[in-house]
Length: 315
Length: 250
Image 1 (cartoon, rainbow over the protein chains, first blue to last red):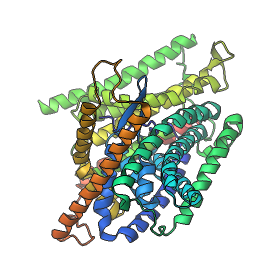
Image 2: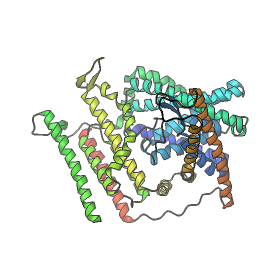
Image 3: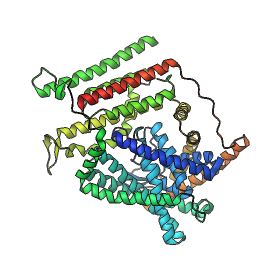
Image 4: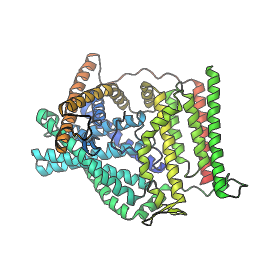
């Protein structure tokens, strides 16, 4: 079962530890606020509504349509959830979806979960909300504002989140900014169109059949100013930072080195196998190979030993 | 593996992945050590190592993101390519390290997920002081996930049976791209409406069974002391390993 077609879930091992921890902290803070807001809004209904809708967004990510030549459009759902339920509820729903994907389906790592939550459960709803609100204002509450707004909000949520992913990879020294940013951004600018079209289709269906579900005329939830200001800032920051970073990858590397102080451990005080070369063997290539073979044998030995003990136990 | 309490297993796996991330680039012996630990646990879990290797393929596409590192690290040139590109030894080292780390971490996560029943994971989340409400939402989501996935699959079957689907790959089903996107959007919207209505029914069912906004849980059972020892011992080993690898490889 591959539930997540949008390749935005960062696996473990790709992000530096300090960055992972910082993003964990930010995500936890936002989720804590969202939990409180949603319980205020929904009260005792929050558990069933949020639970079932999180399952729906999860399942909705299976929906796809073929675009051309094997590629297909998919749904991430952050924008749809934001438009229909408001940003705080969307944060909570996306948190559950992304969390389950990491815990059960190994979509995205556990240490990287903080970053994945930040990209999909914080940036996604915040940016969608900012864009959607902006178009609502511009259109003066007219019908076209809903439709254009939902398309653009969905597109922006994918595009901006992908820029965030690329920046995080670049900051971790995994992927250089001048390649990762245009590549991620370019691909997701296209993928975002699929997301936008699906979201638009979903919103227009609901507009036609259950207009009461679209929270149009209702008073905005408390703390919404914070979100749309935050969302706009996030979007602008990432949009401005990205071209800067991709044209000056060295600058980003400098930041990475400053931030990655944990990586700057002391010089090696002594070495077991100096420079990965086996002592006493003069040919470097040969020595490296021997070291590799020895190590592999060691691992196999340990594994076989465990297997053997295991068999004896069960026999 | 199956017996270890989830409240210890979840933090242990997270610390294992943290340790993997903290081992410096190019500390090959420590990667081997981590793989050895992992392989042993996989064998102990009785699921077959092949099972893990197959599922670990999931993370592979993401390795592409680290590919450019091959060319951009400054260092000794190994292979020169046209267009002024060059593969450096440092680049290769970094790339293989990142790929290995990802591969090790994902197997650890698979081990956790495949040896722990979901209710136990919920228990672990509760023990880790996640807000009660969030745990309840995740639990309810899990309970209805398969119901709604089935509903989605029924909708997708209905779509293919109404839009001229064919096994012939050159035959495109349905109308234009925009039309197809609109249909998919309609399905997403429909799924949403159905889910909202379902959550209404669930809420009323819960109300009629005495739900008052508070989810009641059984008290957490005690963890056997031997498992505590295993836990602490493993933690210490991991810490020692990370410190050693950082001292040796800096």
